[in-house]
Length: 193
Image (cartoon, rainbow, N blue to C red; front, side, top):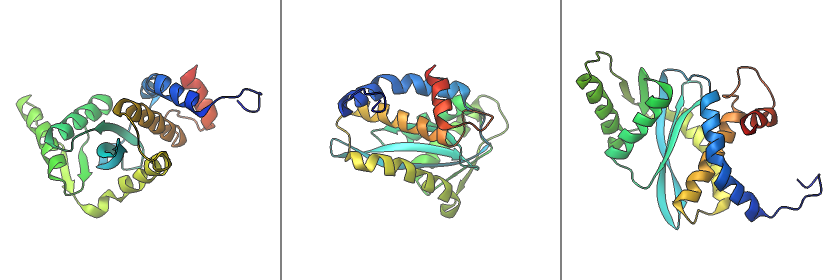
């Protein structure tokens, strides 16, 4: 914008993020290539109005983003909702690696129970091995590096819209939206077009 002589205030850019990031994320979900069936799942913390909330995230064994969800709670119900959302968007995983969180384990147990009640024989294998989860822990660094200078968010809806934009940009950088390797700005133009 500056190169073209257009002066834009940072608050204007922030309003654009709030208004347009969700529609860009929907377009990105349609273009996203499939992920592997071995997932790494974990949650990290984001500060909203001085209170910590939870960002549930999952990546596959190659580091591609599976899904994410921002929640005010860290419990079995939220973990189940996250797994349902991730499975609806990506299909069933064969294996999920997670830390020793009881809530996440119980959430995946609920998914396996639903599979059993639906009459399916195959279940999602659960592994709770701390060091196998390093891939997702490293992937959290990108989100933390981007949100830390913001010094927290003032409202849940704006935090959610901003994180959707950050995660979409992260997918673009990982080349998850294109089978061919193309520059990030071309992938963004394809989404915005």
